[in-house]
Image (cartoon, rainbow, N blue to C red):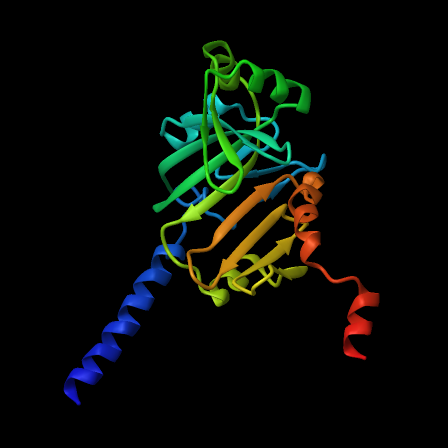
Length: 232
């Protein structure tokens, strides 16, 4: 009986510790200005989070802000999708530790040319490839703006915490299989990926570019006509 009570108290204590990690107390502005829910939206439809002005801040500036060097690579798929990403393995912002992936702003034409100049290609799972950029292209990335951030916190986020900090989502889209649910906040340019089997992921873009986050999810949305048919 005593052991059962101890384990129950310990579980509650650990839950409170996790919550405290994601909800700093006091929050003086100068100390907690780079929290995940502090998103500043500008009149032109761009936004700023973690001190990064999406579409404006260059990779060099983001590295200075995060005080962490990035590993830069291009990724490509068999479907023809390409992106240059900067991976930050360990970033501490306002006391919260996380991994962060920054997507750089290159056009399709630029990405194709960089792909052709790539020095080494590694095959990854599910038809994906990782390309090592040429020296000249690596230099170009230093002065290229970041247009999207993917934030992977060290702690597992409760739904109640997400609602408290971001509000109720405008839309929820469940992936096939039901494991992942996307909580969409178009006015913030945010997609919170709630995962039943892993830690949550927060994806940020400028609100004006929000359809870039939502469009790939439409394959999981059943058209109203089909929904009606399925009920008959």
